[in-house]
Length: 461
Image (cartoon, rainbow, N blue to C red; front, side):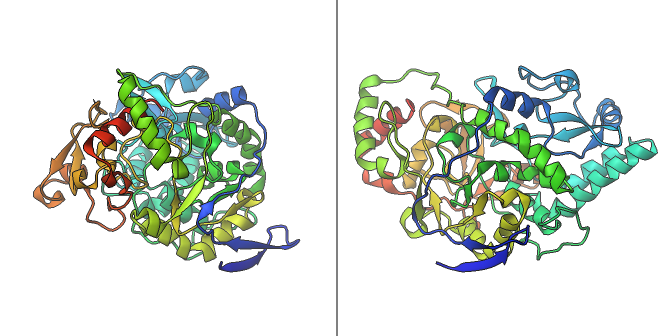
């Protein structure tokens, strides 16, 4: 096991940064919190504390740049938040300027059967546009010295991380790359922002990631696909605050209520499959699951158990790029995290592998694998059915009850067949680095009938 040492942010003792070995991830007790308070602050408080002045937001909406109406109502939103789309939050800065900021639900809430589900990752998000253009465009509506100063602060942060916030494929999420870029601009001891990076920046090649469901938070001993986020989960969950949080005092204030958010997330339950289930076929599938899948994915039902297993790359066989990249950058970004306020009770410990996830509500979480390369559960269980090139059939989720996933179109060639970028960005090309649909080929050993039975059982989870 490789090992580095660094001095803790209080200067008191050295801390180690380790790389994880495959195997079970040990449990760390989590701080207690109040789930009811956690829900309230999740939908009403801002973890990102810079943004567009509200008056400019209204003007830009009238001008067609934004839609001011809520796109899906969420219970418990109060005051100005009740007027905003669910992915935006109102926040009043120390300057007295009211701002509109992004929040966690932009990525971690999505429609399912016509209803917004908090905790379901949004796999239809579009990060292909340059965010600087939108920020600069909104700046035309900003008026007044204090408002301009707040807008400029936000614009500067977005400009610094823009190359790491863009993908070229719908659904590919750049959150990990954004976080690393933000770390590079902050002093780990003070969290003070530096216009010039203090660390070598991460690669501008943004690898795709699928957004995992929140309802599995309570089962996980580590936060991320590669087993990296160990210890106190709150420190990782609130890393989005590094966009604008410029002091330890401000981070400590957010931390005080984010433990309640974590407590709320731990109470979430997976949505029930809303369509008919063949009970006899599902029972056959359950027997197969117990024989073939429980070692990594655990047991479900009355004797539920989740093993939190980090599976080595050569065993699971899935695209290695994300795990390998995290493993190589441990020397600077894991050091930063462990030396910062965020890592005081946690340990960034990446491994050369991926954690076999809990499968609660797996039927609702397409596309599959850590990079979202496989569009349906049926294709996940049969590598011969996985398309090399594919795209969603529409811009809105449309569920396929036979394949278990969002309806998609299989393509004969990649994005080069389309002339416009608007069409190209919908094409998922598994021949690219980081986008491969390889691995997790355990279902190939099953018969067609066994795969049908296993799919039927997975509907019940």
